Image (tube, rainbow, N blue to C red; front, side):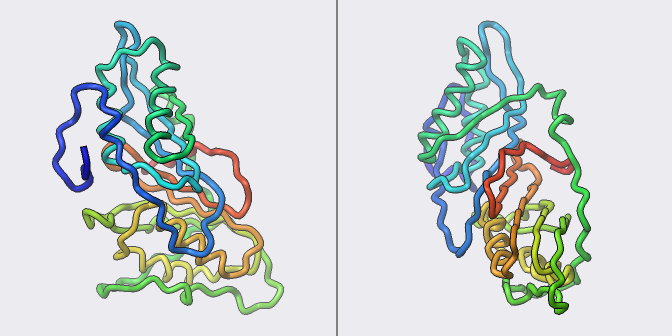
Length: 261
């Protein structure tokens, strides 16, 4: 099966690993960063013996994998497991890891939590909220030159900045994707208003979640910061939300989600 994104495709009635589609990571930015793409999958269900199991799956894909998986194809694949009988929960989990790894060409990890324990990985962000963006009905092009640092020399800070206004467009369907952006950094102080203005341009930008976060990370890294972590907590579509994490340093896998996801 090919080209499920943007197409009307019935859910498979039986185990269908061939439905998984690969999306090449086309790097168009100077700095990619270290980190992970953490996918929270809310429609994970399969059978073990004569029992139906239901889980929230947490899929982790390394940021430097050569490709990622197309989200609609992942949804169809996960739902193809709904009536499939596995020997054990561990056997099911290993099959999913194997199939997705084969699709993208890199090792992945899948962990599962009971559906009534989503609260254990839900944490809200407590940083400084960025100013609201200005009303602008014109098409705005992303411009790293909008980003500025404090003119006060030696003004080195450590900050956590948060924007709940992150919006971009799916490059295939042109439908809006909403998220919350987290920026933790140390170095010359970023002018908050300049970052808000810069992010405003993403409202009409077509790009996958991972590409948008990498572009933001790359442009901020160009300010000469000492350390930087950028995370995009995108809201779910089709029973899946994606949270790309990019950092200047090696970071442990964090399964955090926020309430709006």
